Image 1 (spheres, rainbow, N blue to C red):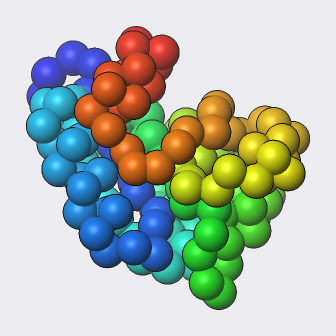
Image 2: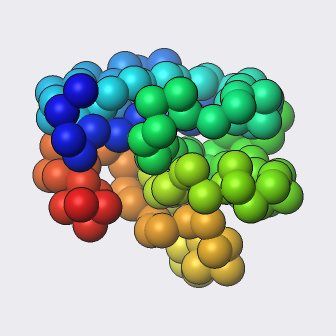
Length: 134
């Protein structure tokens, strides 16, 4: 395992966007694990039941806002109710095609979200995220 690697979770109802994000993450060489979820409730269940990253690495989550059943904000609100020890293992970035100012401003009220990013994920955007994380 190379130093500086991270786990990644992509939560997006678009299979194509998940595929693109996975490819970009794998191409950086920094993705120790990459998991994608089409449905936010499935991701929340996985995170809730996971004892914590076995490899001791932080997990970067890329979360879409506009999804059926449970949207990104509903996911984040449920995530923020988890125990602090669990929350501390994750770094969330909202990745969305929304240009709605209310969505962009609403992200700021969630302490677990680091930043609002525009879709689609690009290698430049991911490089910026990785530089900020270190």
